[in-house]
Length: 263
Image (cartoon, rainbow, N blue to C red; front, top):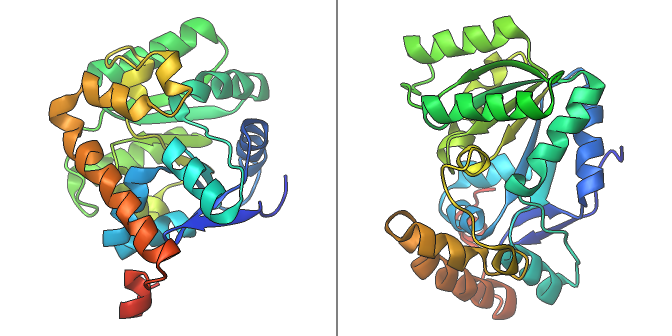
């Protein structure tokens, strides 16, 4: 694996030029490292959050691998920087990663979503990959205060099971906050936040058809499927993102952290 991938940025948020095969290779090799590694993703929603929250921007920019998870980022990087990013979204590739980890003897712990859904994810994967090592699962409905007894108990359970990869699906930015606050106390090799991937994988939330997901319209499909939950993210978030790109990348106004000195 390369020590670092070529990088670009959109509104000050880093994204690596990495394809799916390189991502798989990175995961498999980073499991062998001595330290702990975060592999995360960037989409328009992430950039909008990072614009407001300095800690969130730092989380992405200081992760070991940051891949492109949306066409808004892919197109922005191309038109602004001339960089051709590969869009990689976890519901499309996680099943393939599980197969590679089964062959390599790499173990998982899944954290997130509702109890019945996270258990269903484990069942589906074990049916397809009988030798896959799933050390444990934990639903996401718990008190996430870092020093709280419930959170400490969950950390102790994860560590006692010694998983190689911890997959966290608590939604953005809750999952990133939880990882940031607990990383030092986790005994795992790789941590991967995945947003709503568990719900999609278990079939609890319908995905848009391929003609939409493969042509930059997944946002519209998600909006039509879950309008009550996602209307702000897309109806407000997408135009806001485009305005910020124009303001900072085209008109040259400084980013907020450049004004306040935060970075």
